[in-house]
Image (cartoon, rainbow, N blue to C red):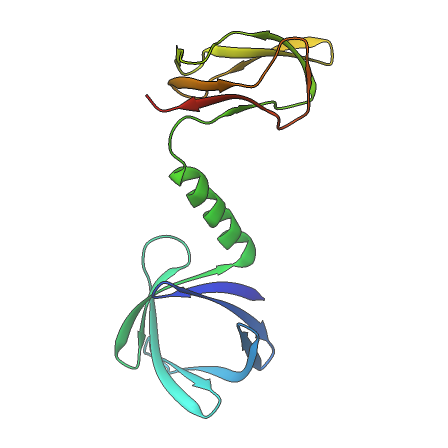
Length: 168
C-alpha cells in the first residue's frame, strides 16, 4: 500500500512492502511493535528503535505524533485521498470569477455580453447550439467582462475559452 505522508510540511511517499518500507524510493527494513496497555509503539528502522505515540487530530489522516519526545504534525493519506484533497484545495484557493468555457462542442448562436459589462451570478453570457438544442451558458459568479472570444456563427470545441471575467 502506498501513502503520501506529510511530516512538519515535508511530503514523503511511503510504500509498505512486506517487512520493508520504501520511503521516497529508499528501501528500509522496518517493524512495528505494541507495548500492551499503553499507546506507545516501538518502531524499528534498520538497527534504530524509536518510541512513538500517534494521536488522531482534526481531519481524516491527521495525527499528532510523539517521536522520542518530539511532537510532530503528520498527515498520512493513501494516494487517491491525497489527490482528492489536493484538487479540492486547489479549486478552493482559486479566486475571482471563473472564465466561461464551452462545456461541449457546438455552434455559438448568440453572444449576450460585451467587454466592460458587469455581470451577475447566473446571468446568460453566450448561447451555444449543440445536438440541435440551444444552451445558455451563464456566469458562475459576479464580475466584469474583460474579453469576449466567442463570435456568433462560429464552431467551438469543448473547453474553448468564450468569455474572460475579472472580480468587481
